Picture 1 (tube, one colour):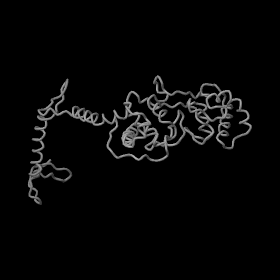
Picture 2 (tube, rainbow, N blue to C red):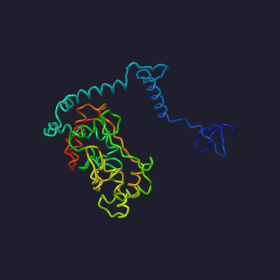
Picture 3 (cartoon, rainbow, N blue to C red):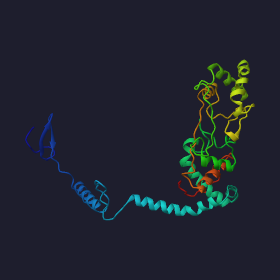
Length: 300
């Protein structure tokens, strides 16, 4: 420590503190900075009085202006519901075919469907509905439960293995995990499925698996392997694969029996919104981007 003294270079007094020969100057803060600081203090006091600021045990001080962000959000949502109410009522009262046949109604449905899809469906099916591994592509014509407007709308409402009373349900057995088949049998079935999709496969394994397929798989996938949309059984003769088409992926599917889940949206969305979403998916499935009128329609 050292005594206060005047610095010969700056002419400013020191604080009396010194570290390794470095002395601290007792320079005053700029006057403009002090006035800004005092103004901030004054502003904070006024804010505490006018706005909600101080928490309490059972609440908070509401402030003289009684400002509430919760009330403001509720008011905005109410205004939004009122704004969308007429369009939603029109969608709910019209049939799916009427919506697609009426250009104005279809434009509204596509705008609503695009918004709802982006917020609720794109995380699994992709922003354009193209799907990813384990999640179906909604832009092709491969549908496990049917691709008509009515069938799409029904699937959206009740979901797949969702727990809904009327949910779409199918069951792929876990042949390996549950001990239904031996590893060698699963390996033969893998070759059989590879052959069904038109690719080269081990002929001896295919021959051994013919009876296995008939006894364990044909009831759902049909004797030809073409599957059945009505019961959600995939076609094994095409080149469309939900969980991968190589031998490792097919063996894993036979061993573990993956059974994906799609939520039932009936309890969350109104009938009109579900119809709009069905129309949006159906138009997308035609193979091109829908012509959407650019109107702002936030998701429910």
